[in-house]
Length: 485
Image (tube, rainbow, N blue to C red; front, side, top):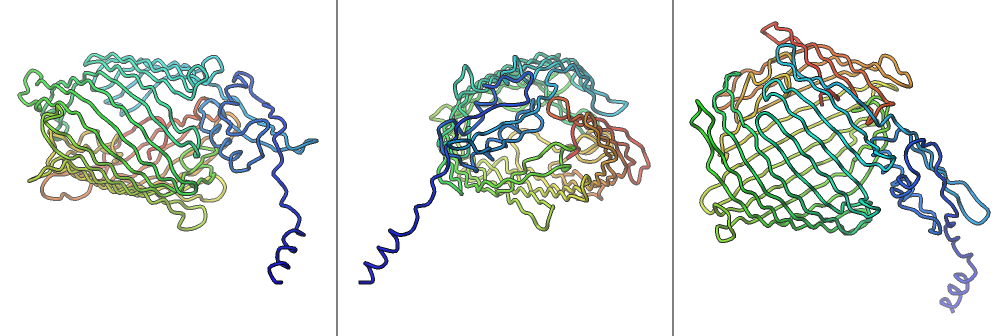
């Protein structure tokens, strides 16, 4: 009798209303971007049930495009369902801009001409002409075509010529186009030549030429809904040749590698929107989902490698929100080449990045980074200076197989306009790089200006920092693009 009553009660309950269907999608706002370029990023289509989660992910995908600024998707009731109005703002995606980085006595400069939205189709073409303070003149051209010929594939290629070598590469991939995508795969090939340098107290101690060619092929699956489990397989092939430059006797041994590997990533996607953290005003989609990844491979002489070993990499990346409007991003990374009786290339990294919103337009940023390298295959080093964590100290001033860096910045925003934003930075840096005995840390403090250009491609930030080294008392001006960290 009780079962009959429950069944009658269930039948008497009204059925849950089905989600409304999407009756239409209209694109408003773009003047150069083709409507089809925007539609292809949407994860919803006419005739499908309305899904607020897919709409939010579609907004996030559109915001990631460097040629779009403000993005909003408004659902509006229609006669038989719902209509989506996609409002976007085109940025100035064509540019002819100077490049500037370094210090007054060692300045790198150049010119970049680019189009982030070639023909309104979302393709990227970029030409760089650059003079690097140490390496000399170079020119490079980069091209990328997402959704190649209307397909889910992405093609990217780069060609670079320099006084010291060249670089040619091409990548064809089928990336994850949404969180629900079940598979990603691709292949790449490259050929490059460059000069490597090692320093002792800013003095060149080794210089050799490296010639390399190789490629890789990979396949990654994605399982799960709220928690993503992504197993993957990769094959990497490389052939590296080394030769010592004149006046220097050292050059690493040549090496050939064919390494199949298996990887696994476990990740829980979670996003929040913020402003004035790493950017100046543009909406930032912070990824707050923690993840852990593991990759293990096998290099064997019988497969063509110069020696047999197991490459192993483990990474743990917690993402936390310890208190309101504060975010902490941590990275713990360990990699090594394991052999039966020894190891090589043990690389350890621990980093904490913290960002806190102060008021409506200000922030406080902190970085603590520690690195260590043991028994490297070739002579390697961590450098420390204005371009690597310690403003107020000349580049390559310190070197070693261990490095510790601490940076603290208060980032006020002084003035905000539609086409430009003026901000600043008051900072304190500390760091040391060493081998053997641990030295006393070097210190620097100073202030800088940040000029944000939110109407230009990718919302660039021009940076200039004036720092005083402690205890030397030397002043050093450094410039560049983007926040220091």
